[in-house]
Length: 405
Image: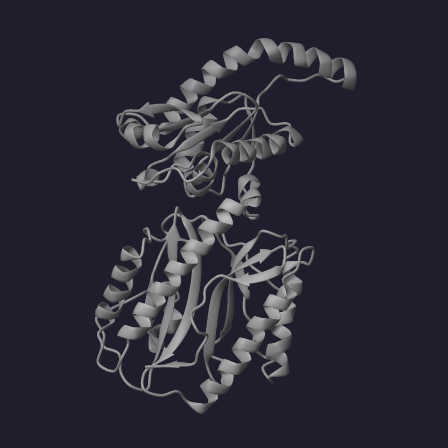
């Protein structure tokens, strides 16, 4: 379906970083099941993740990828750095993984016997010899049944939750990844331009999205993690719904949030388009929204905490007489994403008022300056932003608005 976008050197550096984290935590193996993390370490990009995948990462040697047998062709074409073990549909990925792990345990037993003696001599305490295996317990690919089968079949293992281990490594983007983010941003802008051009009094919701999606695909975009979200303002609160059977009418706003996707990397943007006219209070709120967005750009610096970035956004909002207004975040980290989301998995790493996430150079964000339901006017704008060596780089270039169609 797609070519592996990563060089051997890049993949090797990522694997070494994971192994360094494994060593720090005293892990014998790590079992990864999050699609984004498997892609990050192998480059496997397909729609087969609806069924469990398991990437077995040992402290040395080749990784092992366990999936359905029918995925062999895609994996052979895309994956260069992991052995493939496929299971038939009369068994599960857990069944095959257990057989493989038991074989690995037998081979490991001899070396562990030596290690056990060393530990006892140095620390003066017994080592039960049990393997320490890390699993992502909060992964979309790690169902209750999958985890239960592993634990029941391997009762003598010390299971360690490593949720976030690889996700945290993914937060800082390499130069190659940054380039993919810029390419995705260019497609986001092209798709947004097509959607905005199609919006008018009497335009159907379906036609607007059809123009947007067709343009995105023709521009080189791949299937995004979700969206595009394009819907009338009266359905704004539905959050993660998109087009329906309605017709846009003069006097109403149209919500747009979308992202181009290149090699699974996403650079989202959001805009509010007004059909025919804009209320004065909404035009005034647009100025506040833009000012708060600029405050976030100024606050994003290496070493600051996410809560400080949110505070910069909130300060502009408070100064505008909206101290009653609060948001759960003013943006979140973004990059690799598989359906059903572009947020990088089943959790959101947000720029929240209570977050102690340290901002680092190379991070990429979807920054949202959202001022809807304030009681004094409505507006919002969002963009993909990279924190580079020279400060923030706004990747998406679509005019902030207000935009009237």
